[in-house]
Figure 1 (cartoon, rainbow, N blue to C red):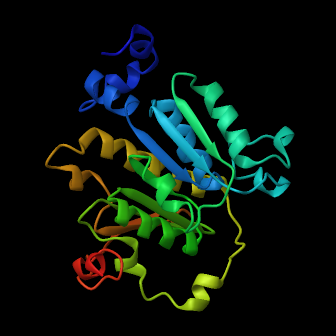
Figure 2 (cartoon, rainbow, N blue to C red; figure 1 turned 90 degrees about the vertical axis):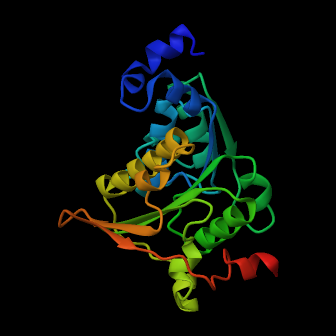
Length: 257
C-alpha cells in the first residue's frame, strides 16, 4: 500500500489510465541499471528518479568535462572534473530521497557485466558505444533480462528494446564491420536530440514494469523493431527487426553451445 507521502508525490502519475496506485507500487518495487550517465543517461536517470523507480543503478567511468555541459543536463559548472556517477548519484538522490540510487564508478566489462546486470530488473544502455552495447546484449540475454539500447549521431537517433524471446541487438547488427566497432565518433550534438532518446528509454522501462504481466506488453514497447528519428527533419519511423534463428547470442543453438 502506498504511504500518504507517496500518494501526494506521485499523484499525477497515479491519475493516469493503466497506472493507479497499483502501477505506482510496481514502479517503487522495480530496479533499473543505467549504463552510462552522459547525454542520454542524464535524461533517462532524471525521469526514472522523478517517477519513483525504487532502485536505480548508475555505471560510468568518465569524469565531467566542460564540453559536456551543453548537452548533459544533469551536470553543473561546479561539477567539472568530478566523476559523473558520483555527481549524478548525489543530485538524483536529492531529487527523490524516497528511492535508492546506487553508483558504480567503473567501466562495464566482461569481468563484471554479469554480476552487476543480474542484480537489476531492467537494463538501459545509453552509451552509444558498440562494444558496450554488444556486451550488454550478451549479458542480458544470458541472464534473461529485458533491456533498451539507444544511440545518436548529430540530429539522428535510434532505439530498440529486447525482452526475452524478441529480437536482440545482435539479431539486427551482427554483421557490423570490425572497423565500425573500433571507430569512436566524436560527433556534434544538441541536448534536445539526446533528450528525446533518453525520454523514450525511460518510457520503455516504465511501460515494461506497468505492463509486463499483461498480454499487450509487446504492443507498448519497441520490441522486434528499431525506432529511428531525425530531429532536424522531424522524422520518426519504426523499422521491422526480425529475430534471427541463427543469432550467435540469442538463438537456441547459441544457448546450447
